[in-house]
Image 1 (cartoon, rainbow, N blue to C red):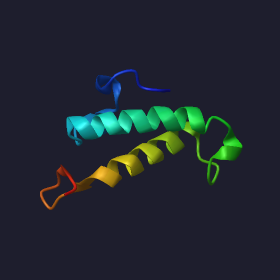
Image 2 (cartoon, one colour):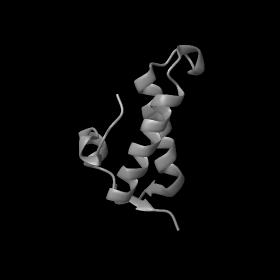
Image 3 (cartoon, one colour):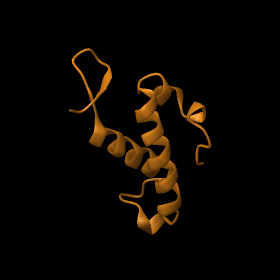
Image 4 (tube, helix red, strand yellow):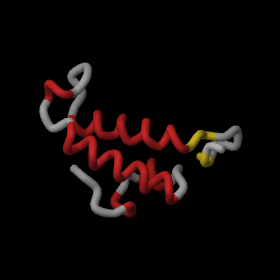
Length: 76
C-alpha cells in the first residue's frame, strides 16, 4: 500500500535513512506500487509490495551510499 507521509514508512527505513533519502524512498515506492500493479509486470513472481520496496531501495542507492560508519550518506 502506498505511503502518504514519510512518517508512515517502515521503521527499518525511518531508522536508517536521512530525511531526504526517506523522501526518495517514499516517492519511488509509491510510483512502483502504481506501475507494477499486475503480476506479469514483476520479476520472479515477486509480490507488488516486494517489488515496490526493491525499486525504492534502488532509487535511494542512486543518491546515497552506506558508509563505513554504518550510516547512509549522500554520494558526492
